[in-house]
Each structure stands twice: as C-alpha cells, then as structure tokens.
Length: 172
Image (cartoon, rainbow, N blue to C red):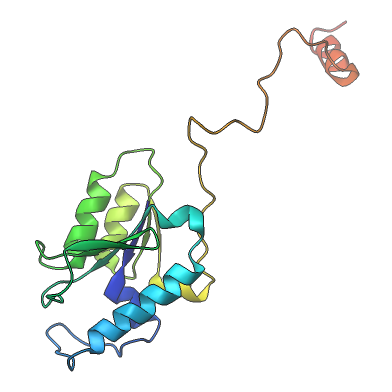
C-alpha cells in the first residue's frame, strides 16, 4: 500500500507556495495544484503500484462537486472530510495496516513519519521521493505468485564441494 500526503507533496514540489494553516487561496488555485500533482504522479507511478495507492487531501474546504473519494487511473483519491486533516486520516490508515503488509508513506510531516516508524513501515520525505525519481521498494511476492527458486531437493546427490565440506566437518 502506498499512501501519499497530497497537499504535503504539492507544497514540497513547488506547485503551491508554502503557507501556514488557515491560509485561503484564490478560487481554483487548490484545484489546479491538485490536478497538476495528480497528473505528474499518475504519469510516473509504476502500474504495479497504482491500484494500491491512496492520495489523501485535507478537506476543510473540499470541492463540492467531488465525492469523498474517487479513482483515477487506478489511484484512489480521498478527501479527509471526516477528519481534522489529512494527517489524522493517514495516521489512522497506518495504525490500521496489518503487520507484514507492505506500507510506504510519502509525507514530510514528522508526526506521520513517527507513526510509520513505530509500525516498522517505510516513509519517504515528499520532496526527496518526487525529485529522486519516485523510487519505491520492490513488490513483495504474494502466495499466488510462483517462487523464482525451487525448493531444495533433499534426495539430490551432493556436489563435490559439499561432499568435501562434510568429510572435513566429520573428520574423515
């Protein structure tokens, strides 16, 4: 699962100037920044990650014409309408993730990063991730994926090196 802190990434890559809480933008500014960021991320996000990606946006003033969540090119886009902000929703998503699940969070927010660290998942700072080529860990194989290595055959004959090792080990 890949979770992206939407407005954090927007600010980190310079699509909106840094602003404090409560700053109001001119009508359409946030929408244009969101659309540009979605376009950039979706274009370069590996296909294998898209269906497991959620981009979370604050929703103090959500666009009325958009639902709470929708899909674009397989990416799940969510407005944190029932939360104080996107950070709260992302933290809850991380806390609810199962151990052993592959979770990567893109955010420069230290509170989110601390939660991710405590759960032993992976985080990347927004700017470093984006400008570093959007690198993501290799996908883990699931149970349905054939293994690339065969199981060892206990009945197979030993190689010359293995035979010599065991003869030295047992002193013969």
